[in-house]
Image 1 (tube, rainbow, N blue to C red):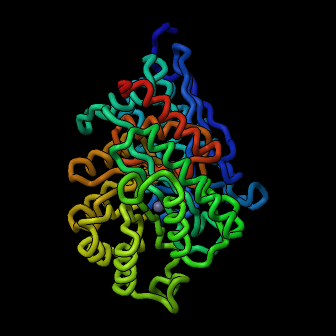
Image 2 (image 1 turned 180 degrees about the vertical axis):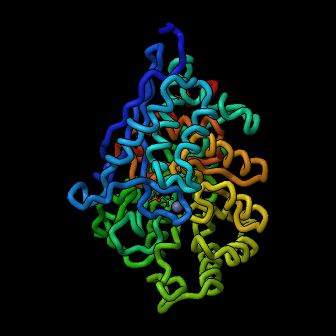
Image 3 (image 1 turned 135 degrees about the horizontal axis):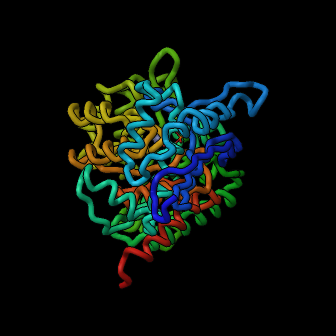
Length: 427
Ligand code: PGA
Ligand code: ZN
């Protein structure tokens, strides 16, 4: 066995828990030289129907059917048999092998969770073997897709109030964000996020709007309408040292799939009855007039292409209209979105597509078309901070890692602080 061999020696997957208490997969890759890499995959709660498929055991006797022992067995069996002896520096060949071995367009045979855990662990092991920080290795791997120099830390967007499927069940919209101005340094932006997070907490206490926190660490208060949540954010900013429209802006992830009425139309608490797509667009345009949104994610359902285009025509010159469930980090859906002019930003989640190389390809398509990129966590996370290195390595415009609170969220924010200190010259 050579001292410097970067060939894969062993692969070992295990079932661990994510931040919601649901199982997920963690994979260790050991190279012949002894260098190793570990990665775990996150999972979504508001899953889009065009995402690659995560394999769950569906055995009601274990973890309510959420176990991932089948995915673990695939990694330790079929995948390990192929991967052993492969060159870990050749991420493209390994990802291709994983995709071919699965053989389905949505990775449902082996599971996008099994495949991604291996893809990421290989990259982590290769970075270690090269004795480089992970973001540097990722940036090197990304060059053939589109030449990219690392010069900044992506701007964080903070999910301060959690509704929808992540919250207490009373707010329709899933995420209420504050977004620091992108001319701030990352550490300043983080401080702004924390200051406003804390002032929002004080306001909720004062209003007796009993709060706990939702899946992504934002507050899940017992407010009644979506507008109440925006008012609280506005108050939170007012009582902080920062100025709305100068230092900090609003962002929303509606995750609109989750409040579609079964017979069609959008159903939200702020309005009686269900709204047709054109009516809902009018509502969103008014909302934007009043609150001057910077980012609006999944404002409409993942199949409502025609109205996405209409909304983008209405407010797209002022608002970053972002596709998450709409695009599912899928190259074909992104190409269609570019052609039809339906959005100006993509929420990019590695587990929606299922391998590192395919993720790079999607980011490159977006960048070439001038589509803004937001590299994102999921609501079910682990303390793995791979996604922070990934965002820096591909130089996304923004990162979405939840509230600046809770271990699995701050693991990513803290990693970005570390990277900032390494790559950004001190003023
Ligand atoms: P999810 O939510 O991880 O539950 O899908 C995140 C998002 O919708 O952006
Ligand atoms: Zn979303």
